[in-house]
Amino acid sequence: MKTFYLKNISEQDRLELTKRPAFDSAAVAASAQEIIRAVREGGDKVLVELTKKFDGIQLGGFQVSIEEIDKAEQAVSPEFFLALETAAENIRSFHSTQLVKEPAVETMPGVRCFRESRPIEKVGLYVPGGTAILPSTLLMLAVPARLAGCKRVVVCTPPNKSGKASPEILAAAKVAGVTELYLLGGAQAIAAMAYGTESIPKVDKIFGPGNQYVTAAKMIVSSDRSGVAIDMPAGPSEVLVIADQPANPAFVAADLLAQAEHGVDSQVVLVAIGDGIAQPIQEQLQRQLELLPRRDIAAQALEKSLVIVAESVGEAIDFSNSYAPEHLILNIEKVDEVVLQIQSAGSVFLGPWTPESVGDYASGTNHTLPTYGYARGYSGVSVDSFCKKITFQKLTPTGLKNIGRTVEVLAEAEGLMAHKNAVSIRLQSL
Image (tube, rainbow, N blue to C red; front, side, top):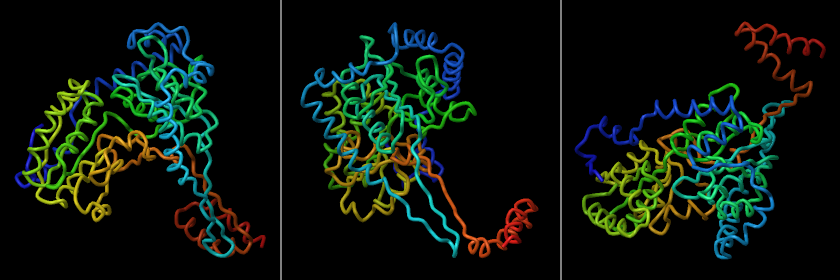
């Protein structure tokens, strides 16, 4: 990991450090666009061809039967199924607090305004399955979707090497109450859910993380008039850890590697408060890396990662806010005193006993989060992500009298006389 000292570099160079590892975005977008075009034109036939091309699997059909999902509990260990149930319950407990009914407001006498939530009717959930299966992602998406009341929850996940859904994914589907699951991955899955095929239903909004091609496909379909909405741009995973001198180097190294093993395009950033802690952490990184089954993947991610040396916690947090990490770990003393200073991050982990892994799996917060700096303007998935917020207003005759002249004046100033007349004609009748 390359080391940079904030005190020695310019403001422009600091901004350069917040940029993620470069990739050929134009080529990725072009490839995703071609896949989308092919799926729109060829439907299921093209999906079969693309699944054979990218996954090496010849599928006879895409949908997993309800019977297979129901039997999933027997296909995994009791301990794993219990872990799924515990995680789902924690996710449900945290997200259920977001089901808040907002009070109506009388903005002036006789003018009553309120806002109500309505579930998005059909949602598509993408659960990655590239170098690792992610049953946790299914829980993170399906549990809040069901809490929101979505009528149709469609899940797409790539087939495994046997041409089936992994037992772990099926078990997560059972725990989350998912009954509609399709074996389909990559940009082609996004295209199928966005536009529909003979077998895959068109949905109203697509959720879920993925690789660069999945993210590119989501961005393309969200900008197409015939496409659908998406949750957020969510690409390769990332973490930024701020560590001060009392931090345990082994803890910090473990957190960095936990993110690095996601994929070769992941990025981890260590912001060390002073020189003294940076070297022990890097030594721990090397020791722990050698013991990981996915050490080759983690090592490639570390090659694109950074060590930033800051002189104070405040300087470190300023850098973090500019970077806007998907995951932010604050392994520092007096951590509760700096919470209000955090302005841009997907999810934050406070103190030495809060590894990012707990948020990935079971603390209850959602792990579908904005990456690549999008945390500056996007939030992670919540129950609200699966809802539409509709505003209502109701006026009495008294209310129209109270507000009417205000509307007439503003409408006339804008030259919209029909707007003015819609009020005036009512006032005259009163």
